[in-house]
Length: 199
Ligand SMILES: [Zn+2]
Image 1 (cartoon, rainbow, N blue to C red):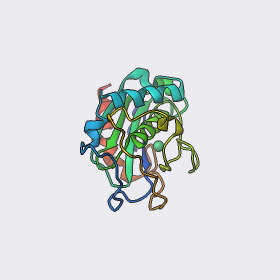
Image 2: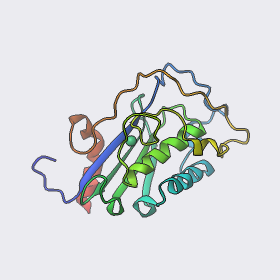
Image 3: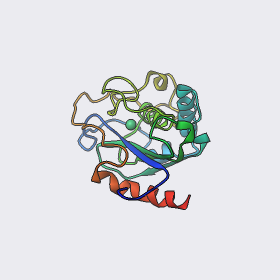
Image 4: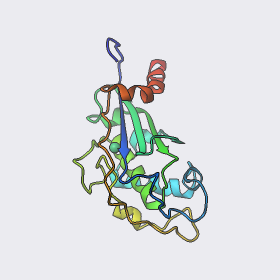
């Protein structure tokens, strides 16, 4: 953004995962369906997770206008969220626009994990920054399911998929820097930046 006078600040964050997804033969779902199918936009599972996320934060971030997509990302990333705000990344979430959540198709999601990750990303869009790494749902690294998600039976399965115990290993790395810092952030911000010019 150097020298570029954009009126909005763009923020992007990524939720890293615990354990190596490539080597972890987690049981995951036994339906054989890809996560973007089981938990696709508009499915009962997605709607249930969105509802739980709204209730968790007590708000409908971005006025409910959140672009949720499934895409391929690095194996260490559960999901990313990004948004634009005229003031700052987290201080005035009611002004958030261009809200977007990108879920990684490569992650072996089960319901509880998917639900927890969505709640986490909604948290960002609702003005929550990362907490210090720990059990909090806003931890930058996924540490296991949110209890509220475990209380909901998997809406995507007639017989709920077995929930794997969270992998205790810590190959996860810290979240990437948000906002404008870091060249690694450039690629994923590019589409956002283009969108910002439109408005
Ligand atoms: Zn995050």
